[in-house]
Image 1: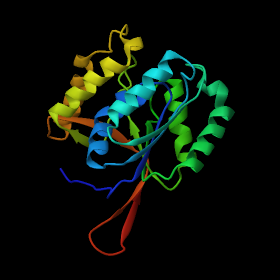
Image 2 (image 1 turned 30 degrees about the horizontal axis):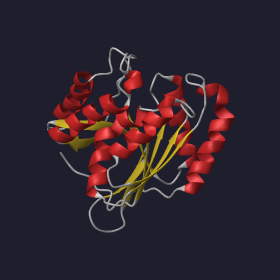
Image 3 (image 1 turned 120 degrees about the horizontal axis):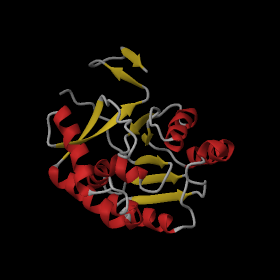
Image 4 (image 1 turned 90 degrees about the horizontal axis):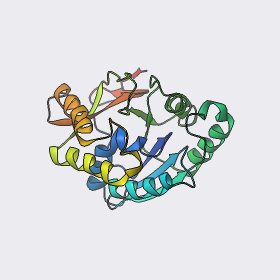
Length: 223
């Protein structure tokens, strides 16, 4: 397995359609990055849940998933399941979010997610973050839309287990879903681990990137 490196991280941006999307999609990666980069700035935007118990859950959860980081989170009140009908409002807020942060990496849903809210976020992110590394995370849920990621972030077993534990702890409002349990979360991360020859991992969809082959200025573009 060939490793790619982002270099030192000072700030990342995380975007989700719903409270818990970010933690489900990349909670283990957040735990790993925050631990490896003390003082990391995490700029977050979530479209729905503002003014409800879900906003309180999300604030507490991201603080737990980003230990030692400076978390700046905005939770909007776009109705759950109705994001396409609020396209203009979401576009405006994404533009404001883009101008308020300077991340080295941007994380959000991937374009082939079958949930309309997730898919809209994935489609709009690259229109605002045009010169950034944008990575799409996968959200475990009822729909059979599991992607085929080509990019993996490896997790230790301890981090994978901590992610599953924190999800159960910080999102009690979701406990009634039959898929929202530690076995499901660990099952997916173990599968991704098998696919990159480690115990656990989280998979990502690469939006677009450039690569340098060895020393020098020769570059190839993908995407």
